[in-house]
Image (cartoon, rainbow, N blue to C red):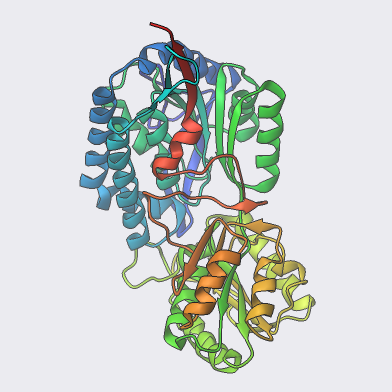
Length: 480
């Protein structure tokens, strides 16, 4: 084990794991970000035991104690947003402005939930029986296991950790193996926030070991997971088998509808931002561009030109618009779907090739396909890369039907100048989030996040709605 390995954080102590993992920069595979500890099952169980022991005390902590700790965390994140944003971009591959923006969002989330800790409330009701008083209150669930993905390595951990702590739960946090750097930096900040030992624990390692231990242990009373559909289904099955709460965010195949009356520049911006920024590696990315026939030729021409002009490069270089794909495996998946789209008869009009730059990295030109059919497999599966498919529609009604024809239901967007169609789309789009004249990717931190159908299961994340998952309701009756 290297002397510079970043350790796990368990019961207030930094502990080396049973092994370590190298964190490689996807913009330059010769650049080693660092070595990070890998936990085994016994060490994970030690973290769960620490959280379980700390849970009663933290549940009875004052709202002010929780608010102060979260506010300190948020303040430090914001003060260090440039430094942490560079680290994020270096390990994950999104551009520096996107990395800094994500860190700032994480800081704002902790600040928001610092105040939510003080805003907890209940109900006092009259009973139907004379002389009886009723109180409805919320209490923490207990030990919460948090499993996060690689594509938002500080924002998604923030929007799980902050409400868990704000509502009095203790945490065992397992970040994605690909991006331990941002998770470790966040844990280091949290370690100095004044939380009692065991309230927050970081356990880095493979999902088959650390994640499975969280799924199996009855002391983990709630599981919040963001990641693939297959893994999410296994989380749900494990939680149901032992009666644990669960919350799943799993993916999307999001539509961006463009009607004939849309502003062309707005539509192009929504598609470029939604489909290709963050290298298309967002569950809210718009990969199905559903376009009515009147505007289809003009939009195709403008969008093809805009796609070709996108600058792909090192995430930390000024002027880079699209960073690298996160790793070799994800790049291979993107290329498989590009080949599949060609085989299915889709017409490639821009990009789709790997790039060789001055430094070795996982670079891919954003791919734009025209004349696609919603039944094509590449229009059904979540690719999770910079690949967008234009699908023609006869009219608004046809476009809406195509938009809803997907097993997913996370985000759905429309570009139109018609208030009638915008209002109808907001009501009838089968998605948890709807955007009008805005990219599908890009959401506020103080409102609910989540989808329907195959995208999400369980209560919503973020905003005041987070209380639904991180607390349990108690009804108390009193006869004085």
